[in-house]
Image 1: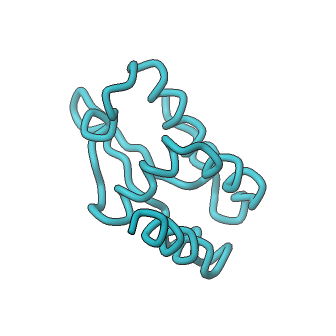
Image 2: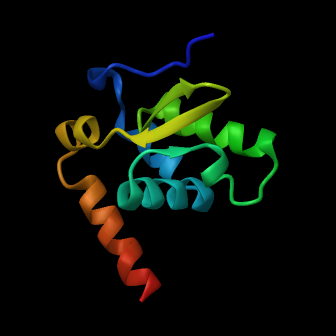
Length: 103
């Protein structure tokens, strides 16, 4: 089964905001923005596989991340170009706010 990745013009702001409204998913986005593509295992944060699969699905279906198979695992990456084109400044503002929160 191929994961659902919306086309760039199908990415809706309300879906992106809903996906980013969860602290776990927000942390995944922060890590992907800082470190680039990561395996699902590297991002699992000790949570149950089923829980993280749900988070991946929400992020993927909303258009926030790409998910691609690599052997027995999936790799995740941020759809920065698509998000920046659809909602200029959204990711930069969000990531800056996260940095301020953590200092």
